Amino acid sequence: MAARRFLAAVVPYAKAGGSRQGSVRLDLNENRFPPAPGVVRALRRLAAGALAMYPESEPLRRELAKFHGLAAENVLLAAGGDQAIRWVFEALLDPGATVAWAAPTFSIYPLAARLRQARIRAVPFAEDFPFPLPGILAVLAAKPALLVLVSPNNPTGTVIADAELRQVLARAGGTPILLDEAYGFFSGRDHAAWIREFPNLVILNSFSKSFALAGLRLGYLLGAGGLLGEIEKVAPSFPLSAAAIQAGLAALSAVGHARQQARRMRRQKKSLIKALEELGVPSRDTEANFLLARFDDAGAVWEKLRQRGVLVKRLAREPQLDDRLRITVGTRSDHLRLLAALAEILPPQALLLDMDGVLVDSRLSCDETILRTVRHFCGGRPRLRRLRDLRMAAGYNNDWRAAAALIRGNGCRVSLARIKARFQEIYLGGGGGDGLRCREKWLAPPALLARLRRRFRLGIVTGRPRAEALWTLERSGCARCFDVLVAAEDTGSRPKPHPRGLRLALAGLGARRALYVGDQVDDMLAARAAGVGAVAVVPASLPAGSRRRRELRRAGAGKFISDINEIEEVFHEKGIR
Image 1 (cartoon, rainbow, N blue to C red):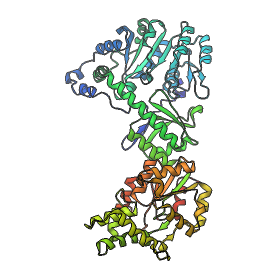
Image 2: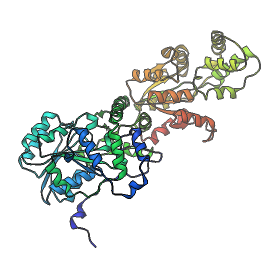
Image 3: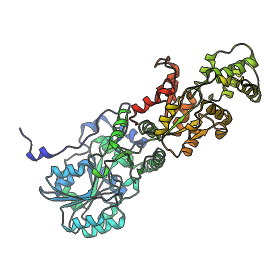
Image 4: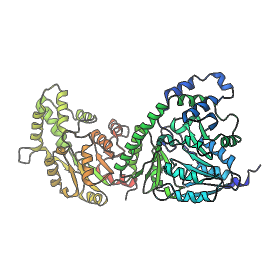
């Protein structure tokens, strides 16, 4: 048995693949904020007998009419907006008839047109996607069988101003106009009252976006009774399930909850746009629950996000949007995962480095100074293991504070001022070059730093006092390799894990995207808070499942290296040249 010949040229709707398990779905424009609690309660109260009977949808029809200030005859319910679109096209388009819209638009419209074997007149959006009013009016003059308007438009986010919409309707004559307002709840626009003035106007809406009920498939049409009556002729007798009807009634009774969630969504969108800008990613705001982000290689970014379990919408089929990804606005945790993935994916503009454990082997200097300071006040020989365990917790990146914590742990009471004084005496020495800092070993070869500087802007973010950091840099002969040095005095009362130091370095370098290389939990936490990628230095002898690796990864480490000389391998993996 063969299908109709024209179907061979029809491309089906591209359904999102893959499982939600372990993934963040920001590709389907679902409402990521939960529906009203009363909706769930209504579904739980659904009687078993209701499942055995054909559902009665009239109560929902009346409530929807009341919600929009209309009569019940002005409402036609459907199993989702997609089904309603099919009904409109089937009722109003003969094979070979012309349907028009501004392009690009929701991909169901081209599919529905091809299934009706209709001719498509697509009026292209100009750059920045303003509504193409002159082109739409020109198409109307040719008297198409149907004009589709989508506001806000998916995927461009274009909103049609009331004056523009009124001008189109005034010029339409007898041409039916389908106005898709599936995202209108987010923009605060509702033109239901206009159907009294324009009997050729049909409005499409849905519970999927505004009321977060995409899983129940509940859409509807608003229009003059005569026009809806014609469309209803192609509709099945019972398009809705009993569950969808009960959920819809419960959602309408709690419309205040939906409005509150819409405000919450707008706040999250605003913060996401700001965070993307901080990563150097320009984005286009919309009055819907999504935004458009621009990338130099959108396809590569899309794939790398997918590999990390973050799903966004690729728009490769639309030439005007092939450099953009459509991102559904989600919850704060959704955005944190997206931003962390982007920080790993996007090439850094700057490379920031800690000193101790990264540029300098400080085991025989700083670590030994801490242990000698503890022994001075408490006696005995403190164990290095205790110091290493301490640094796996947040807040002990500072050597003075680490020494103070060990001293307290030994039951000794010593002021921080005395601890600092003794530490500095041991570390700096008495002026004759006998301090433990002279034992430090510089780890980054000048040739490596020269290669890195050709690729990135380089900066140091350290907890060391500036004078000590500069002394070490001069001693190494590498002071001129770095454009920015952020030291203890710069962060004041906000040392790592606070991101202040990293943010100061980024500002000083004029960069938005960076990698920070450190070896402590505080380093990783500071990087994550600053929105930069984190690379952790750990000894090669530590196995993959070691506690230190686990803690560093939990704190935000995206990559591990055994010393600074392996940093170029990280860039090779990220495709950075």
